[in-house]
Image (cartoon, rainbow, N blue to C red; front, side, top):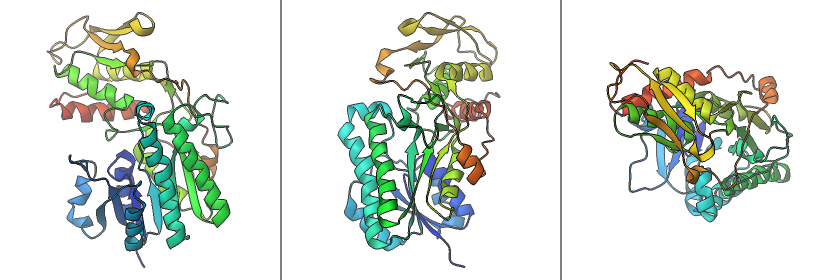
Length: 358
């Protein structure tokens, strides 16, 4: 039986690395797109790339979504059965600073993929990584596939274009293009500038004496957090359906950023006290194991609020309803937020050279 061939853009990112692992386990031949960079950016997939087991099944290619000629050459050469478009300029705050670049990558980049696929082989199954940020200024307290969108950033606006162009090509040309509207999903492979990872690595650096405190923005933003490994599996399952469709993937539970920070402190055995309001709100360390954490000080400030980390347009509450995915994809998230936070903390403690048990 012929191996299926998959092409993953954004393969060096959190989702791409988990998806590559999954597809290789399912005996796919996997090709990944990576951008040329002066720095090495493949650490999330190095364990795959240098594994002899996958030497003839996992390949990395230089290219850029905004360069249609490179995408065209790759698709002609690779001849994929499935394309997973996970590449993006995915930082919401950066999208306000670089709106044109964000739009080129997230919107025109995806258009380059589907236009190329349409001209080469319309039977290729295509997955588009959409986002819960589409809901922005929420029109319903819980969001599903029928909830109206109201994007509040250049990032989410660019993603909205890709969402609608995928539906347009699906209906106009009969192409198999599906959207996964994924709510927040975390793991130790999350980028260090995303808030959950900023918290876990920040606390690890404080414990290791490398930093004094963490600075964050809106502590009261509510997010629906799951584990990236489970969400990657859903990306694959969405393309295994007989017909293209769009699915919300979420846990159905949401928590504030303040809660996530407090949870991480609890896991580490750090007792904190909150005080102040607005930009003056802080988290202070009031009790801890002095033998275990020798570089910490009682009454030390662990967190401050800094207005530079607030978005021009805040998205205050996101909470997904995955009833459709539960029914049609048998979606059942199993990893709880406490487990996610602990896994991330263990990873980041090791990253800064600490081996304390949590």
